[in-house]
Amino acid sequence: MPAAVTATLIGLFALLAFLEVPIAFSLGLSALATILVFMPSQGLGVLAHQVTGSLMHEALMAVPLFIVAGLAFSRSGVASRLVRLARLVVGRVPGGLGVVAVLACMFFAAMSGSGPATVAAIGTLLIPALGENGYDRGFAAALLAASGGLGIIIPPSIAMVIYGLLAGENVLRLFVAGVVPGVVVGAALIGCLAVASWRRGYGSGAQRAARGELWRAFVAALPGLAAPVVILVCIYGGFSSPTRVAAVAVAYALLVDLVFYRDIRLRDLMGIFREGAVVSSQVLVIVACASLFAWVLDDQGVTAAAVRWLSRAAVPRWLMLLFINAALLVAGCLIDAISIYYIFVPILLPVVKQMGVSPLHFGVIMVVNLAIGQVTPPVGVNLFVACGISRQPLERVARAAVPFILAETAALLLITYCPALSTVLVGVFLK
Image 1 (cartoon, rainbow, N blue to C red):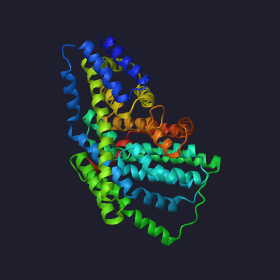
Image 2 (cartoon, helix red, strand yellow; image 1 turned 135 degrees about the vertical axis):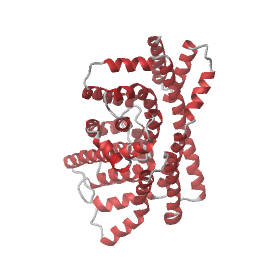
Image 3 (cartoon, helix red, strand yellow; image 1 turned 120 degrees about the vertical axis):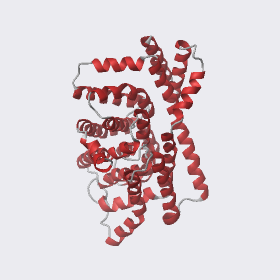
Image 4 (cartoon, rainbow, N blue to C red; image 1 turned 120 degrees about the horizontal axis):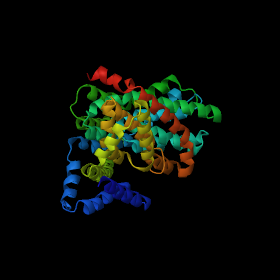
């Protein structure tokens, strides 16, 4: 029975995906068809039960809140002020404007929790600026697409909320665990950028900033610079749920604009809430359909069979981790991050636990994999956002992204085989 269910489920999903049906509906329709064929006695009642049950989790309330916070920070001008400060500080060195892009993404990632939101907020400002300063526009788009993946590694992270829900891991501990790996991935991107800038002769052409100008830029950006600190203090301070941290992020974003910037008008505020509702509904539809797909796998014994097969494989731990990373990277090319969590976490988590890998460390490994997946076609969402901003063809941006993908993969291997990078801050701040 598991073989027949697997063939039907995966075959229908592959067919629907090939026909360019959205991934969420491909998962949901293939699961529904499998239920009707192999579980006719349960009827459609199980569909309603599983879909509604998958959405009835308090942790999921953090998702729309983090989305709204990211939109509010973007519309309030925080991103533009962060970019200006970073440009004045490091913009003069060769490749400095590219470094500004990575650093700005790292800071904005600590506010948004989303890869595409980070690309949109920072890319809108810096992709044109990079082009005007002699950078190839395809290269500039690829750099922002890769740097935007930091949005789901550096806390807060919507992806970590989903993983924590599925793995039963404390989401706030996951947030803290993502800080150092996020810095490692950012450093890998900057290293790759430095080599490319040296080979291609990329520079910024920026003039030395006057001390008064630098000070004014710092003061203007200070509320934005404080945002990650406020969020991390909430986490380290023992806030009991990611939902409360997300609520603080929204309140802080709106307060910063009201007191300091005043860029958001009333109609803009309603637009932020409207866009936040639309984006949140898209995310939650994927959650509902992916959870139904995963339930069919579990109910029909496919997940248990896969766990048994992997557990019995006489493979060294280091090689199994390498295999898991390779499988997740391939999946990231084809499926969105949330669906990957629902399909792979129930299968892989028992296996890595048996190998002695902590769920906390494995959560970081998965989120770095999925950050890379956001840059790999054909489903790399960050690529599509960057292509839309730069107006460059997908093929050109994807080719330019290859060195950054390799740099991120090297960082992934370091994070995989050095678990202390994921656990050191957790041990210090959340004992």
